[in-house]
Each structure stands twice: as C-alpha cells, then as structure tokens.
Image (cartoon, rainbow, N blue to C red; front, side, top):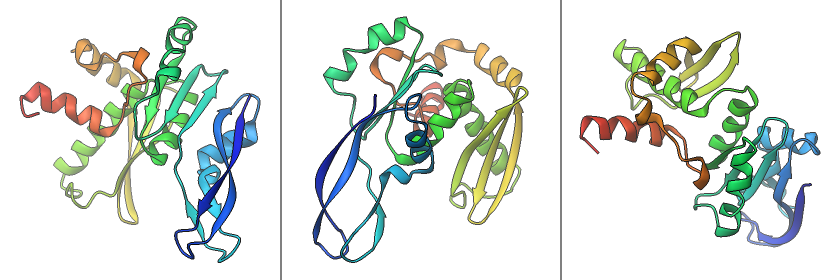
Length: 214
C-alpha cells in the first residue's frame, strides 16, 4: 500500500510557501500509475501555485515492487534502522534491496530490476562501455555527459554513452558479462542486507581497489 502526506514547501523562486503531497512509500504492484510517475520522475516534480514555476525535489522514499521482488530506498543517507530491520525477512523471500542516492539512479534502477537483470551486471556493462568509448577515441571522460542503461532483450543489454546531444550505443551479451564476473566473483559480491548503493561510483571503486589506487 502506498502512503503519502501533505507538507509545507517553500518555492525556491518566489520564496512563498504552499502545500505539496509527498510519498513515503510507493507500492508498484497496487499503484501502477505511481510506478509510471516514479520512472518518469514526475512524482518529484512540483509546481508553485503562486509563480507557476516547476522544479524537481528529491525526498526520501521507499519503493516496493512485489512482482519483481525488489525494494529501493531513495535517499542520500543510509537506510534508517527501522528499514534495515526489514531486511532479513525480505532477503529470505528473495528480494533485492538497494539504496539510490539520486533520482537518476532511482529511475534507472527500477528499469534494470524490472528487466530481471542484475544491477551489478548493469553497472559493469556501463563501465565497460565507458572504457571502450574513451579507448577508441570517441570522446574524453570530461566530454561524456551520461552513461545510461537502456534495456535488456533476448540476452543482450543495451548501454548508451552520451556526449552532449550525441551518443553511441553498445550491445553487450549477458553471457559476456557473466564470464567477466566469474573471473573474480568475490570482487562483485554485494551484501544485500544493508541496502547497498550500487552505482557508477561503486563499480569504479572496485577497480581502484583492485589496482591499489583507492
């Protein structure tokens, strides 16, 4: 069951206050419209009734997908004790538990886990695509504006590397990623019971530690 509440918010433009509805919990299976608003980011989009300006506001949210068995904690901070206390029964039921620090990570994580693929594998694919893009002289790390997961179909994962309004897509077989992980499985181990943050910084830290450059 999804839960929301009304809070007072001050417009960053006109500095006047107004009431907004924010969601503490979103249950995707029972509220598909809310699920769509989470994926699009619209659930975090506010409109000031005074000056009519629109803006995005990130707030802590628990996202539950009972069909695909995952729970996301959206916050720059670690999961609170009350949420961590739910990890054991959820893990025993086969749920994937993750923290997302940003709205972009949150929206992308929903797509990855709905596709039924490992987010560890997705981050590895994004990292490999980044390296191939730069090594082949398609752009410098400074020029890259985004490395995005697109979808997984028929055992192929699609990743797009963007430089401004231009982009290049990479099609990576899941078997190739599985083989890469199998070469050093301990490196990619994740503790599911602490709502781990699995993102680009995480995958880069693995390689920095492996190289002794952390």
